[in-house]
Image 1 (cartoon, one colour):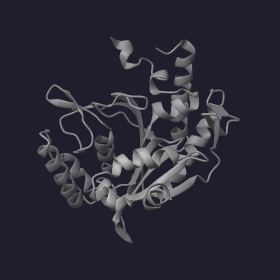
Image 2 (image 1 turned 60 degrees about the horizontal axis):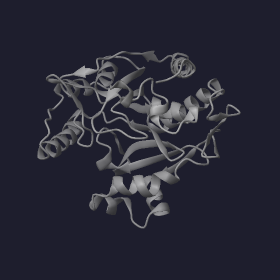
Image 3 (image 1 turned 90 degrees about the vertical axis):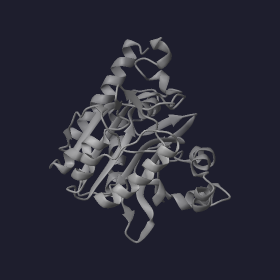
Length: 306
């Protein structure tokens, strides 16, 4: 359980997040967390709530708001995923998600840099921040001054493994190799954007026009920890339906319930080019606080609820 000092630090941190987006004319939205249908994602296990589901992300409803005419929106909300518990995972966690119509994933990388830099300055009294400009982790200083490092997935596999991304995919070992052999090296000089994922690993992301086997997707890493996942959004409803069909087939093969989000697909057909990103609020606050694990920065850890 957080102390009164910890509660104030967390509150100030979240208010600084809000201020960043309000100053950039983003509209804060508040969408339902309990839904009848979720985006089909075979790698994520949702939590049931009666005959409905608790959201794993606010993405579905937020994109529908964009299709309805909103142009730049953000949300700070709780999300829920089963079988996610550990030093960097919790079954209930706080997500920051934001979208900007007319942007692509490169624009979003630049804004993500600005967000973390300004947030670190605003939260410079936290134990994990030095000089308002750097993160201190494991006695190593990570410089936040842009531009941050950028590394393609193919380059990362070439630098840190004895295989390729395509071979790892073919052997169904991509995630294993990424987590064990690549992630620990990322983001120790400056934060790092790992980008241009294989298209198979970006079911909601737009293909690169000059390399359609790749998705315009990135993940942000700092101190070997993944903080955010962003895309140039796929806004082709027919292509998105095909991708969802593949996810649903995989889910049903493993005995999991799945349904096509028809209302979402109907609205997606009205959405213009857009970029969107989800950032783990608890993980970033953990780094800023100099804490070892998520439980140290949550108001209540799971064990404290029993």
